[in-house]
Structures are given as C-alpha cells and as structure tokens.
Length: 439
Length: 101
Image (tube, rainbow over all chains, first blue to last red; front, side, top):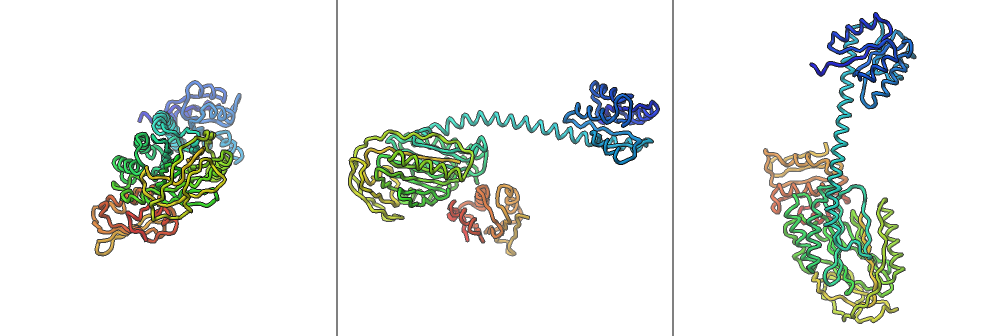
C-alpha cells in the first residue's frame, strides 16, 4: 500500500552498516535518507521531514543522543519515532537512548526481521498520534465554530429574554457564567398598571437544548405582561405554548411572582421549584411551596383551573419602615424585597448577597439603586375573601397617609388569583426594592 | 447494571429497578427497558429503592415513559422512594402523574 511507504532517515557513521540498513529498509518499500553523523541527520530531518529515524548512538561530530533531542524538538507534537541503533549493552546507556527521546532501540548486529517488525510497530504508534492530533484539532475547530454560533444565538436570546425590566433599579440578579446558555431563566416586566412580574424558570437539562425553550416562554411572558393579562392567563398561555413546542420530557420548573407596589401584594405561583419564602420583617419565613406541575408537562394545567388555589397571594404588611423579602430559592436564587427604608433595604440586600455567595461563587452583582419614594393614592382596604388561609395574620384596615410608627400587619392567605383583587392596606410614600438573584 | 427490568409472570406488569444515580447517563438504558416490541404490560412499576439521586433529566425520562405507556391513561407507580427522591418528586408535583409510594 502506498500509504505504508515511509521516508526513513538512517544516521549511521559506518558506511557498511549504513548500506546494510538502507538495503533492508528500502526492500520494505520505504524511501531512505542517509546521514553519516548527527549534524547531517538534523539537517536532513529539517529538509525532508522523514517519518521515522534510525539513529546510531555513537557518531562523530554530533552523537545520536543530541541529534535525537533536536529532531524531537523540531517534530513538535507530531510523533517521529526514533529507533536507536546501538552496540551499547549497559542498561545505563540504553536508558540514555530513551531519555534523549528515543522510542526504541535495536542492538547491533542488525537482525532484519526484528528491524522490520520494529519499524511497523513504530508506524502504528506514529499513526495513532497523528490521528489523535488530527481529531483534537478537528474538535477544537468544531468547538470554536459552535461557540461562535452560540455567541450569535446568545445575542439574539438576550434581546428576547432581557427585553423587560431586569435592569430596573429595584431588581438584582446573579447569573452563573458556567455556560453561555443554560436552562435557567429570569424574566421581569411591568404590566400597564405598574405591577411587576418576575419569572424564574429552570428548564430540564443543560445548555442550548435547555435554553431554546426560554425564547418562546419569554415572548409569551413579555407580550402578555405588556397587555395587562393576569397571572393565571399568562401561566396558562406559557404552559400551553411549552406543551405545544417542547418534546415530551422537557419542561420548565418555574416560579412566577407578581409584585404590586400599589396594593402591596405579592402573588406567587410555584410549579416545580423548591420552596420560596416570604421573609417577614420580623424574620419569620413563610414558605411558598410548589403546588403545581412544572410548565409544559400537561396540556391542561388542572391546578390552574382551580381558581382559588392557583396563585398564592401574600399581602405585605409593610409598616413603612421595614423591608420584607420574597425569597425564591431555585436551582436559581431569587429574592424580592419589598420595603420602604432605604438603608434597611440595602442591608437586606447585602444579606442576600452573603447568602448567595455561600451557595454559589462567581456571580455578577448588579448595583442596586433605590427609587425615590412615590406618593400613591390611599386605597381603602377590602376584607379578604379567602377562607383557606395558610396562615392568618392580623388584618389591619385603614389608611396610613404616611409611613407611621404604628406597625401594621397584613393578611396572608390563598385567595383568588384575579389581578384586580383588592389589597389590604392603602400604602403611601413607599420606595420598593426587589432583589432577584439567579444562579 | 444500573437498570434492570422484570416482567411479571402474567406479562401484565413491568418492573424497572434503578440503582445509584438516575440521571441523563441512563437515558438510553431506561428507554430500552420499556421500549420492547415483545411485551405489552398494562402497568409499570419503577423501583427506586437503590436510587440515591434523581435529576430533572430523570423526571423527563419518567414523562417519556408516561407518554409511551398511554399518557393520561398510563398506570405507573414509583415505589420505594427514599426521602430525597420523594422530596424531588414532591416539589415537581409528580404525584399528579404517577402513583408514588
């Protein structure tokens, strides 16, 4: 086979041995180059780039050890097998041959059969190395190609996924830089009445396949939020969309929260993510348990049909001085802080950072600015309709024209998921902070 | 073998046992355990006694089995779940889709 034909360099100072070796090698069909000393061998190697070298150890001008070292250096990553030809028998000398970069040695006097077999064995190694290098380079090229494709896709993805209000001063999030794409998703948008929707999602799997479902999800989310649809409507549509387009077995665990700054309510829906919490200013934690299947599993989200239990409504009892947190610990982490006191709020956020850093290192932290307090019209409270409260707080009626010293409590419970549901206390003069973290 | 399956003597029930980590690496093996032309079980039992870890890919694989076994009509029970596994199934509310014990 033509491909079996090699260019073999023979470096040997004895003309008789050189002749003998050349004859043996040439008879095997290889092309032979000959050198009478190490220096010649190195020069010939540079010119002709033979694939295999038979190297006498002891030669005038430059010995085989030095020549082998130089040839190996010139060969770089490619394997150019060097077989030492030696009459040396002490193990120390043989070890020197290998240490100089020799791959094998052949003792004088030469045995034709063994020489031919060794050339073949070395050729197998050489091919193996060449294949490994070729495949490594191929993989590197493919990977580079893939990454550049992903960078373009990521730019598109970011345009879609981050078209909302993630950069709002009251939102803060962390995103893991582990992969360009991952299945984790954070979306935020205002609806026309100024409520903020925050969606944390975690798609099954990793990488691009996991991220791809995020695009349509984001489009539904932003589109419907902008049109003022209610949480159940948005959830139903997102679920239907994902069910329609995702293959079976791919789904999105998600928590959707709606923060109403005016009514001071938090509405939370959790499908498949670990418990979130409402952290009250007094330090108590109210779990926000997953009560639903993830999005995209069932065509009909049965739980959503049960109106009263679809969305957990938590009324913020804010006393005008304290920060309350909605904390959603996901494969992601998110916290929404709703509070009034700037300093306290910032302290709370630093607390969030500490938490997040404990859980995850290497995040991106966005600086938080707290918006100016807004004056909002006072709203008279309506009694809560729900009889299925998970935890009853003292319900406080009344309007506070200013954040007062009096501590007010809200009521927590399950209620109708209707977006026009009345909140409890009228609230005035609040700055709010929402902190969302994703890892 | 991380996955083994056994058909009941009447051919009505296929039990698939999973040892160790139930994750994406078992994707094909899990599929092979139930996608067999020679059997038509009515019920499936996934024995998770030896399962100490379960990820979202595993949940996806369970959904694929459910789809294969008839979707809403599928009869699939997940048995011998340890507390960690049960917690994951609970968070995902898979109790709505599978009988978990």
